[in-house]
Image (cartoon, rainbow, N blue to C red):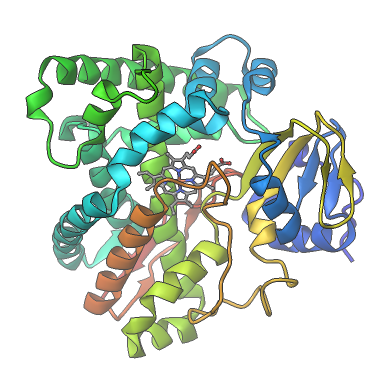
Length: 402
Ligand code: HEM
Protein backbone atom coordinates (compact mmCIF):
# COMPACT_ATOMS: atom_id res chain seq x y z
CA UNK A 1 0.00 0.00 0.00
CA UNK A 2 1.28 3.45 -0.92
CA UNK A 3 2.40 5.43 2.14
CA UNK A 4 1.09 9.01 1.90
CA UNK A 5 1.77 10.03 5.51
CA UNK A 6 4.73 12.16 4.43
CA UNK A 7 3.13 13.48 1.21
CA UNK A 8 3.91 17.15 0.64
CA UNK A 9 2.04 18.95 -2.14
CA UNK A 10 4.74 21.60 -2.09
CA UNK A 11 7.42 19.03 -2.96
CA UNK A 12 5.75 16.92 -5.65
CA UNK A 13 7.87 15.49 -8.45
CA UNK A 14 7.42 14.57 -12.10
CA UNK A 15 6.19 11.06 -11.15
CA UNK A 16 3.17 12.62 -9.39
CA UNK A 17 2.55 14.96 -12.34
CA UNK A 18 2.66 12.04 -14.78
CA UNK A 19 0.36 9.75 -12.77
CA UNK A 20 -1.38 11.46 -9.85
CA UNK A 21 -4.45 9.26 -9.46
CA UNK A 22 -3.02 6.39 -7.34
CA UNK A 23 -1.61 8.88 -4.83
CA UNK A 24 -4.86 10.85 -4.84
CA UNK A 25 -6.86 7.65 -4.21
CA UNK A 26 -4.71 6.79 -1.21
CA UNK A 27 -4.89 10.35 0.14
CA UNK A 28 -8.68 10.29 -0.28
CA UNK A 29 -8.83 6.97 1.63
CA UNK A 30 -6.35 7.46 4.43
CA UNK A 31 -5.70 11.21 4.69
CA UNK A 32 -8.58 13.10 3.02
CA UNK A 33 -7.76 16.35 4.81
CA UNK A 34 -4.04 16.04 4.38
CA UNK A 35 -1.80 18.42 6.29
CA UNK A 36 1.27 19.61 4.33
CA UNK A 37 4.41 20.52 6.29
CA UNK A 38 3.71 24.26 5.70
CA UNK A 39 0.38 23.96 7.56
CA UNK A 40 -1.83 24.06 4.46
CA UNK A 41 -4.30 21.24 3.80
CA UNK A 42 -5.00 19.24 0.64
CA UNK A 43 -8.62 18.06 0.24
CA UNK A 44 -9.22 15.05 -2.03
CA UNK A 45 -12.86 14.12 -1.29
CA UNK A 46 -15.71 15.40 -3.47
CA UNK A 47 -17.93 16.51 -0.56
CA UNK A 48 -15.12 18.39 1.22
CA UNK A 49 -14.13 20.22 -1.99
CA UNK A 50 -17.76 21.04 -2.74
CA UNK A 51 -18.36 22.41 0.77
CA UNK A 52 -15.23 24.56 0.45
CA UNK A 53 -16.30 26.00 -2.90
CA UNK A 54 -19.86 26.61 -1.71
CA UNK A 55 -18.92 28.43 1.47
CA UNK A 56 -19.01 32.23 1.27
CA UNK A 57 -16.38 32.28 4.03
CA UNK A 58 -13.70 30.69 1.86
CA UNK A 59 -11.68 33.47 0.27
CA UNK A 60 -9.90 33.65 -3.08
CA UNK A 61 -7.83 36.77 -2.37
CA UNK A 62 -4.17 35.80 -2.72
CA UNK A 63 -2.45 39.13 -1.96
CA UNK A 64 -0.65 37.64 1.03
CA UNK A 65 0.09 34.21 -0.42
CA UNK A 66 1.37 35.61 -3.72
CA UNK A 67 3.32 38.37 -1.93
CA UNK A 68 5.23 35.61 -0.14
CA UNK A 69 5.56 33.43 -3.24
CA UNK A 70 6.48 36.00 -5.89
CA UNK A 71 7.75 39.12 -4.06
CA UNK A 72 7.14 42.44 -5.88
CA UNK A 73 7.15 41.57 -9.58
CA UNK A 74 4.88 41.52 -12.67
CA UNK A 75 3.60 38.00 -11.81
CA UNK A 76 2.36 39.23 -8.45
CA UNK A 77 0.63 42.26 -10.02
CA UNK A 78 -0.99 40.03 -12.62
CA UNK A 79 -2.29 37.26 -10.40
CA UNK A 80 -3.45 39.56 -7.57
CA UNK A 81 -5.39 41.76 -10.03
CA UNK A 82 -7.22 39.06 -12.00
CA UNK A 83 -10.75 38.34 -10.81
CA UNK A 84 -10.10 34.70 -10.03
CA UNK A 85 -7.82 35.60 -7.12
CA UNK A 86 -10.09 38.25 -5.63
CA UNK A 87 -13.22 38.44 -3.49
CA UNK A 88 -16.25 40.74 -3.69
CA UNK A 89 -16.70 43.63 -4.22
CA UNK A 90 -13.86 43.85 -6.81
CA UNK A 91 -14.51 40.28 -8.00
CA UNK A 92 -18.20 41.10 -8.55
CA UNK A 93 -17.42 44.16 -10.70
CA UNK A 94 -15.08 42.29 -13.06
CA UNK A 95 -17.29 39.18 -13.17
CA UNK A 96 -20.42 41.19 -14.08
CA UNK A 97 -18.57 42.96 -16.90
CA UNK A 98 -17.14 39.72 -18.34
CA UNK A 99 -20.49 37.93 -17.97
CA UNK A 100 -21.88 40.27 -20.67
CA UNK A 101 -19.95 38.18 -23.18
CA UNK A 102 -21.51 34.88 -22.14
CA UNK A 103 -25.24 35.48 -22.47
CA UNK A 104 -27.20 32.71 -24.27
CA UNK A 105 -27.63 35.03 -27.29
CA UNK A 106 -23.89 35.68 -27.56
CA UNK A 107 -23.16 31.97 -27.14
CA UNK A 108 -25.57 31.12 -29.96
CA UNK A 109 -23.64 33.52 -32.21
CA UNK A 110 -20.41 31.90 -31.07
CA UNK A 111 -21.68 28.47 -32.10
CA UNK A 112 -21.73 29.43 -35.77
CA UNK A 113 -18.23 30.85 -35.53
CA UNK A 114 -16.97 27.69 -33.78
CA UNK A 115 -18.48 25.46 -36.50
CA UNK A 116 -16.78 27.52 -39.21
CA UNK A 117 -13.38 27.46 -37.52
CA UNK A 118 -13.58 23.72 -36.76
CA UNK A 119 -14.49 22.84 -40.36
CA UNK A 120 -11.58 24.88 -41.64
CA UNK A 121 -9.16 23.30 -39.15
CA UNK A 122 -10.36 19.81 -40.05
CA UNK A 123 -9.72 20.46 -43.75
CA UNK A 124 -6.13 21.14 -42.77
CA UNK A 125 -5.99 18.00 -40.61
CA UNK A 126 -7.14 16.04 -43.67
CA UNK A 127 -4.38 17.54 -45.80
CA UNK A 128 -1.77 16.79 -43.15
CA UNK A 129 -2.78 13.19 -42.37
CA UNK A 130 -0.03 13.01 -39.74
CA UNK A 131 -0.04 15.83 -37.24
CA UNK A 132 0.59 17.08 -33.75
CA UNK A 133 -2.92 17.10 -32.34
CA UNK A 134 -2.08 19.91 -29.88
CA UNK A 135 -0.34 22.39 -32.19
CA UNK A 136 -2.31 21.59 -35.33
CA UNK A 137 -5.81 21.30 -33.88
CA UNK A 138 -6.53 21.43 -30.11
CA UNK A 139 -4.83 24.76 -29.53
CA UNK A 140 -6.09 26.52 -32.64
CA UNK A 141 -9.83 26.66 -31.92
CA UNK A 142 -9.79 28.14 -28.38
CA UNK A 143 -6.99 30.51 -29.36
CA UNK A 144 -9.01 31.88 -32.27
CA UNK A 145 -12.20 32.16 -30.22
CA UNK A 146 -10.75 33.97 -27.23
CA UNK A 147 -8.56 36.17 -29.46
CA UNK A 148 -11.68 37.16 -31.37
CA UNK A 149 -13.48 37.95 -28.10
CA UNK A 150 -10.63 40.17 -26.98
CA UNK A 151 -9.85 41.70 -30.35
CA UNK A 152 -6.32 40.22 -30.49
CA UNK A 153 -5.00 40.39 -34.09
CA UNK A 154 -3.81 37.22 -35.81
CA UNK A 155 -0.16 38.27 -35.71
CA UNK A 156 -0.01 37.78 -31.92
CA UNK A 157 -1.95 34.52 -31.67
CA UNK A 158 0.99 32.16 -32.16
CA UNK A 159 2.53 33.56 -28.97
CA UNK A 160 -0.47 33.00 -26.74
CA UNK A 161 0.19 29.45 -25.55
CA UNK A 162 3.80 30.25 -24.66
CA UNK A 163 2.68 33.27 -22.63
CA UNK A 164 -0.08 31.40 -20.87
CA UNK A 165 2.05 28.38 -19.93
CA UNK A 166 4.71 30.75 -18.55
CA UNK A 167 2.17 32.76 -16.55
CA UNK A 168 0.00 29.87 -15.34
CA UNK A 169 3.05 27.67 -14.72
CA UNK A 170 4.08 30.07 -11.95
CA UNK A 171 0.98 28.98 -10.01
CA UNK A 172 2.26 25.43 -9.57
CA UNK A 173 3.17 24.35 -6.03
CA UNK A 174 6.82 23.98 -7.06
CA UNK A 175 8.25 26.71 -9.35
CA UNK A 176 11.89 26.65 -10.53
CA UNK A 177 13.60 30.05 -10.83
CA UNK A 178 13.78 29.87 -14.64
CA UNK A 179 10.00 29.38 -14.84
CA UNK A 180 9.47 32.34 -12.49
CA UNK A 181 11.61 34.54 -14.78
CA UNK A 182 9.79 33.34 -17.90
CA UNK A 183 6.47 34.12 -16.17
CA UNK A 184 7.58 37.67 -15.33
CA UNK A 185 8.80 38.29 -18.88
CA UNK A 186 5.53 36.95 -20.28
CA UNK A 187 3.39 39.26 -18.09
CA UNK A 188 5.47 42.27 -19.21
CA UNK A 189 5.42 41.48 -22.92
CA UNK A 190 1.82 40.32 -23.05
CA UNK A 191 0.75 43.26 -20.87
CA UNK A 192 2.39 45.77 -23.24
CA UNK A 193 0.63 44.23 -26.26
CA UNK A 194 -2.74 44.29 -24.51
CA UNK A 195 -2.29 47.81 -23.21
CA UNK A 196 -1.79 48.98 -26.83
CA UNK A 197 -4.86 47.03 -27.98
CA UNK A 198 -6.96 48.55 -25.20
CA UNK A 199 -5.80 52.08 -26.09
CA UNK A 200 -6.60 51.40 -29.72
CA UNK A 201 -10.11 50.09 -28.92
CA UNK A 202 -10.73 53.06 -26.57
CA UNK A 203 -10.08 55.40 -29.52
CA UNK A 204 -11.99 53.20 -32.02
CA UNK A 205 -15.01 51.78 -30.19
CA UNK A 206 -16.98 51.37 -33.42
CA UNK A 207 -14.42 48.94 -34.82
CA UNK A 208 -15.39 46.29 -32.23
CA UNK A 209 -16.67 43.06 -33.78
CA UNK A 210 -19.97 41.48 -32.76
CA UNK A 211 -19.33 39.31 -29.69
CA UNK A 212 -16.21 41.17 -28.64
CA UNK A 213 -15.83 41.29 -24.86
CA UNK A 214 -13.02 43.88 -24.82
CA UNK A 215 -15.41 46.71 -25.55
CA UNK A 216 -17.72 45.72 -22.66
CA UNK A 217 -14.74 45.57 -20.32
CA UNK A 218 -13.40 48.99 -21.31
CA UNK A 219 -16.65 50.95 -21.43
CA UNK A 220 -18.87 48.87 -19.13
CA UNK A 221 -19.71 49.97 -15.59
CA UNK A 222 -20.98 48.10 -12.58
CA UNK A 223 -22.21 50.03 -9.54
CA UNK A 224 -20.72 53.18 -11.07
CA UNK A 225 -17.26 51.56 -11.27
CA UNK A 226 -15.14 51.18 -14.42
CA UNK A 227 -11.95 49.15 -14.63
CA UNK A 228 -8.61 50.99 -14.55
CA UNK A 229 -6.04 50.40 -17.31
CA UNK A 230 -4.04 48.05 -15.03
CA UNK A 231 -7.18 46.09 -14.11
CA UNK A 232 -8.12 45.86 -17.78
CA UNK A 233 -4.71 44.63 -18.88
CA UNK A 234 -4.40 42.00 -16.14
CA UNK A 235 -7.95 40.69 -16.54
CA UNK A 236 -7.52 40.48 -20.31
CA UNK A 237 -4.33 38.45 -19.80
CA UNK A 238 -6.28 36.21 -17.42
CA UNK A 239 -9.19 35.79 -19.83
CA UNK A 240 -6.91 34.95 -22.74
CA UNK A 241 -5.16 32.33 -20.61
CA UNK A 242 -8.36 30.94 -19.05
CA UNK A 243 -10.07 30.92 -22.43
CA UNK A 244 -7.58 28.83 -24.31
CA UNK A 245 -5.22 26.84 -22.10
CA UNK A 246 -7.85 24.69 -20.36
CA UNK A 247 -9.92 24.17 -23.51
CA UNK A 248 -6.81 23.11 -25.44
CA UNK A 249 -6.28 20.51 -22.71
CA UNK A 250 -9.92 19.41 -22.79
CA UNK A 251 -9.55 18.52 -26.48
CA UNK A 252 -5.98 17.17 -26.17
CA UNK A 253 -6.70 15.07 -23.07
CA UNK A 254 -9.88 13.76 -24.68
CA UNK A 255 -8.10 12.50 -27.82
CA UNK A 256 -5.32 10.94 -25.70
CA UNK A 257 -7.91 9.22 -23.50
CA UNK A 258 -9.79 7.85 -26.53
CA UNK A 259 -6.48 6.52 -27.90
CA UNK A 260 -5.99 4.70 -24.58
CA UNK A 261 -9.60 3.37 -24.56
CA UNK A 262 -10.34 2.00 -28.06
CA UNK A 263 -13.60 0.41 -26.80
CA UNK A 264 -14.97 3.86 -25.89
CA UNK A 265 -13.72 5.28 -29.19
CA UNK A 266 -15.64 2.54 -31.03
CA UNK A 267 -18.70 3.21 -28.87
CA UNK A 268 -18.71 6.90 -29.78
CA UNK A 269 -18.26 6.12 -33.48
CA UNK A 270 -21.24 3.75 -33.27
CA UNK A 271 -23.38 6.26 -31.39
CA UNK A 272 -22.32 9.90 -32.04
CA UNK A 273 -25.26 11.09 -29.90
CA UNK A 274 -23.06 10.26 -26.88
CA UNK A 275 -20.84 13.27 -27.58
CA UNK A 276 -22.44 15.37 -24.79
CA UNK A 277 -21.88 12.82 -22.02
CA UNK A 278 -18.49 11.94 -23.54
CA UNK A 279 -17.28 15.54 -23.14
CA UNK A 280 -18.47 15.55 -19.50
CA UNK A 281 -16.62 12.28 -18.90
CA UNK A 282 -13.43 13.69 -20.43
CA UNK A 283 -13.75 16.72 -18.14
CA UNK A 284 -14.11 14.38 -15.14
CA UNK A 285 -11.52 11.77 -16.10
CA UNK A 286 -8.65 14.15 -16.97
CA UNK A 287 -9.67 17.52 -15.57
CA UNK A 288 -7.71 20.30 -17.28
CA UNK A 289 -7.49 22.27 -14.02
CA UNK A 290 -6.61 19.86 -11.21
CA UNK A 291 -5.98 21.98 -8.11
CA UNK A 292 -7.72 25.04 -6.64
CA UNK A 293 -7.04 27.16 -3.56
CA UNK A 294 -9.01 28.95 -0.91
CA UNK A 295 -8.17 30.69 2.38
CA UNK A 296 -10.53 29.98 5.29
CA UNK A 297 -11.92 33.42 6.20
CA UNK A 298 -13.82 31.70 9.04
CA UNK A 299 -13.66 28.30 10.67
CA UNK A 300 -15.13 25.58 8.46
CA UNK A 301 -16.50 22.17 9.48
CA UNK A 302 -15.96 19.80 6.57
CA UNK A 303 -18.42 17.00 5.70
CA UNK A 304 -15.67 14.46 6.48
CA UNK A 305 -15.82 15.71 10.07
CA UNK A 306 -12.62 17.76 10.30
CA UNK A 307 -12.77 21.39 11.47
CA UNK A 308 -10.35 23.78 9.82
CA UNK A 309 -9.61 26.97 11.77
CA UNK A 310 -9.88 30.45 10.27
CA UNK A 311 -6.67 31.26 8.38
CA UNK A 312 -6.11 27.73 7.01
CA UNK A 313 -4.75 27.70 3.46
CA UNK A 314 -6.68 25.06 1.51
CA UNK A 315 -5.73 23.22 -1.69
CA UNK A 316 -8.71 21.51 -3.32
CA UNK A 317 -7.96 18.50 -5.48
CA UNK A 318 -10.44 18.79 -8.34
CA UNK A 319 -8.82 15.66 -9.81
CA UNK A 320 -9.23 13.78 -6.53
CA UNK A 321 -12.86 14.86 -6.13
CA UNK A 322 -13.63 13.78 -9.69
CA UNK A 323 -12.42 10.23 -8.99
CA UNK A 324 -14.15 9.88 -5.59
CA UNK A 325 -15.82 6.43 -5.38
CA UNK A 326 -18.35 7.85 -2.90
CA UNK A 327 -19.81 9.83 -5.83
CA UNK A 328 -18.74 8.00 -9.03
CA UNK A 329 -19.20 4.24 -9.56
CA UNK A 330 -15.94 2.63 -10.57
CA UNK A 331 -14.29 6.08 -10.86
CA UNK A 332 -11.17 4.95 -12.73
CA UNK A 333 -13.30 3.58 -15.56
CA UNK A 334 -13.65 5.91 -18.57
CA UNK A 335 -17.34 5.61 -19.48
CA UNK A 336 -18.58 8.02 -22.15
CA UNK A 337 -22.24 7.42 -21.24
CA UNK A 338 -21.75 8.08 -17.50
CA UNK A 339 -24.85 9.68 -16.01
CA UNK A 340 -25.20 11.43 -13.64
CA UNK A 341 -21.74 12.93 -13.74
CA UNK A 342 -21.50 15.64 -11.06
CA UNK A 343 -17.81 16.39 -11.69
CA UNK A 344 -16.39 19.68 -10.51
CA UNK A 345 -14.02 20.42 -13.41
CA UNK A 346 -15.56 23.94 -13.54
CA UNK A 347 -15.98 24.00 -9.72
CA UNK A 348 -19.04 25.65 -8.13
CA UNK A 349 -19.80 28.70 -5.99
CA UNK A 350 -19.21 32.36 -6.80
CA UNK A 351 -16.09 31.66 -8.88
CA UNK A 352 -17.71 28.92 -10.99
CA UNK A 353 -16.10 29.02 -14.43
CA UNK A 354 -17.65 31.78 -16.53
CA UNK A 355 -16.58 30.05 -19.72
CA UNK A 356 -18.03 26.61 -18.92
CA UNK A 357 -20.83 26.77 -21.53
CA UNK A 358 -18.42 28.06 -24.16
CA UNK A 359 -15.82 25.39 -23.31
CA UNK A 360 -18.47 22.65 -23.47
CA UNK A 361 -19.66 23.94 -26.84
CA UNK A 362 -16.10 24.09 -28.20
CA UNK A 363 -15.38 20.58 -26.87
CA UNK A 364 -18.55 19.08 -28.31
CA UNK A 365 -18.15 20.62 -31.76
CA UNK A 366 -14.38 20.06 -32.01
CA UNK A 367 -14.46 16.43 -30.85
CA UNK A 368 -17.79 15.55 -32.48
CA UNK A 369 -16.73 16.81 -35.93
CA UNK A 370 -13.24 15.35 -35.54
CA UNK A 371 -14.54 11.80 -34.95
CA UNK A 372 -17.17 12.17 -37.68
CA UNK A 373 -14.52 12.99 -40.26
CA UNK A 374 -11.65 10.86 -38.94
CA UNK A 375 -12.85 7.54 -37.51
CA UNK A 376 -9.36 6.08 -38.00
CA UNK A 377 -7.32 7.50 -35.15
CA UNK A 378 -3.85 6.21 -34.22
CA UNK A 379 -0.90 7.36 -32.11
CA UNK A 380 2.13 8.39 -34.18
CA UNK A 381 4.92 8.78 -31.61
CA UNK A 382 5.50 9.57 -27.96
CA UNK A 383 3.37 12.22 -26.22
CA UNK A 384 4.89 15.08 -24.28
CA UNK A 385 3.13 16.07 -21.10
CA UNK A 386 2.81 19.68 -19.96
CA UNK A 387 4.97 19.31 -16.84
CA UNK A 388 2.59 21.06 -14.44
CA UNK A 389 0.58 19.73 -11.49
CA UNK A 390 -2.19 22.33 -11.54
CA UNK A 391 -2.88 22.27 -15.28
CA UNK A 392 -3.11 18.82 -16.88
CA UNK A 393 -2.45 18.56 -20.56
CA UNK A 394 0.07 17.84 -23.31
CA UNK A 395 2.50 20.00 -25.22
CA UNK A 396 2.65 17.44 -28.02
CA UNK A 397 0.44 14.52 -29.12
CA UNK A 398 1.47 13.04 -32.49
CA UNK A 399 -1.37 11.23 -34.29
CA UNK A 400 -2.35 9.78 -37.67
CA UNK A 401 -5.86 10.06 -39.03
CA UNK A 402 -5.62 7.75 -42.07
C1 HEM B 1 -12.37 23.01 -20.30
C2 HEM B 1 -12.17 24.28 -20.17
C3 HEM B 1 -12.18 25.02 -18.85
C4 HEM B 1 -12.01 24.55 -17.57
C5 HEM B 1 -11.75 23.12 -17.11
C6 HEM B 1 -12.11 25.69 -16.68
C7 HEM B 1 -12.04 25.63 -15.31
C8 HEM B 1 -12.20 26.71 -14.46
C9 HEM B 1 -12.17 26.62 -13.02
C10 HEM B 1 -11.94 25.34 -12.20
C11 HEM B 1 -12.36 27.87 -12.53
C12 HEM B 1 -12.44 28.31 -11.06
C13 HEM B 1 -11.08 28.53 -10.43
C14 HEM B 1 -11.17 28.93 -8.98
O1 HEM B 1 -11.86 29.91 -8.62
O2 HEM B 1 -10.52 28.27 -8.15
C15 HEM B 1 -12.52 28.75 -13.66
C16 HEM B 1 -12.73 30.11 -13.58
C17 HEM B 1 -12.89 30.92 -14.66
N1 HEM B 1 -12.91 30.54 -15.99
FE1 HEM B 1 -12.74 28.67 -16.72
N2 HEM B 1 -12.34 26.81 -17.44
C18 HEM B 1 -12.40 26.45 -18.77
C19 HEM B 1 -12.62 27.27 -19.85
C20 HEM B 1 -12.85 28.61 -19.78
C21 HEM B 1 -13.11 29.47 -20.92
C22 HEM B 1 -13.22 29.00 -22.36
C23 HEM B 1 -13.23 30.74 -20.42
C24 HEM B 1 -13.49 32.04 -21.13
C25 HEM B 1 -13.53 32.24 -22.39
C26 HEM B 1 -13.09 30.67 -18.98
C27 HEM B 1 -13.18 31.74 -18.13
C28 HEM B 1 -13.10 31.67 -16.75
C29 HEM B 1 -13.22 32.83 -15.88
C30 HEM B 1 -13.43 34.27 -16.31
C31 HEM B 1 -13.08 32.36 -14.58
C32 HEM B 1 -13.06 33.19 -13.30
C33 HEM B 1 -14.40 33.16 -12.63
C34 HEM B 1 -14.39 33.90 -11.30
O3 HEM B 1 -13.35 34.01 -10.64
O4 HEM B 1 -15.46 34.37 -10.94
N3 HEM B 1 -12.85 29.37 -18.62
N4 HEM B 1 -12.43 28.01 -14.82
